[in-house]
Amino acid sequence: MPSAKPATKKPAARRTSDRPRRKRKVVGAGVLDQLKAMIASGALLPGEKLPAERELARQLGVSRPSLRETLRTLAVMGALDVRHGSGTQLAPSSANVLSSSFEILLLLDQPTALDLYETRELIEVHLAGRAAERRQAEDLRTITQALVDMEAAKPKSRAAMEANLRFHAAIAAAARCVVLARIMACLYDAIRASIHSASLGADDLDASMDIHRRVYEAIRLGDAEAARQAMKTHMAMGVADVRRAYSRSHPTKPKGRS
Image 1 (cartoon, rainbow, N blue to C red):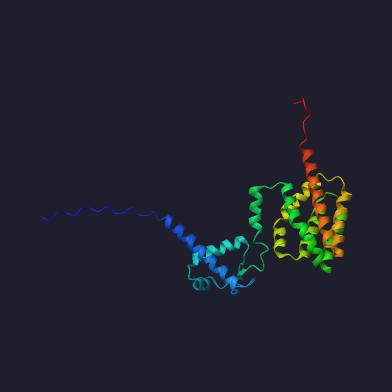
Image 2: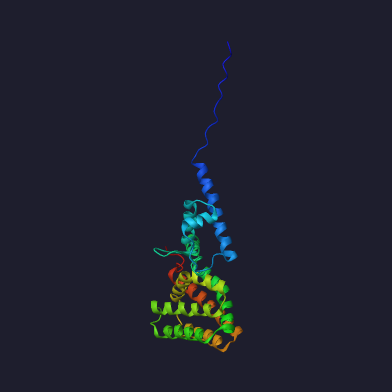
């Protein structure tokens, strides 16, 4: 009588929930890399409409769901402009690409107003010098209008703060440093907050307006060194105002009293 074959134990089935997750991640990364290669090679230009989803999936050799997931990620990043009824386009510039990342950074790290002024000094002192070297007539008109609006607005009002922000944005534009201008644009909400924090401790409003005029005048005259020095002084005044505002809101308790 032939002996029975020993029963073989079947290997435990791999969890199917793991495999698709890893596969989607690899495929998604591959799709993204291929799209970046198309942009780098000039096959896809800024502002250009993407091929239809079916055709693009065929070109990349991926499934439509994988492509759709990657395109959705790029749209959230600001790299794609999705318009219902007219298709999906590559963003015309990187203006919105960094904004969401910077917003998350600020929410998670919650930098102080002093942190923001330190960052502003590193960027804006350089931009002021470049603006003096590269400004054009239209730039000067924009900076001038922001300065006029600051002078006309009620001190420490929202209108004054927004005009102040436009003043700094116009200087960034006049500098024609694309990457730094993009970073500045991402920081506008943080800069607005730092301006507000400084305004709480600003006592000498005439001095505040005067330093803005000095920055403008140096840029108008094309004096890069004077523009950098004036902006550095401006940032130092902002730091002093922030410290003054903090000391007022956190007064030291007299000794011997509870």
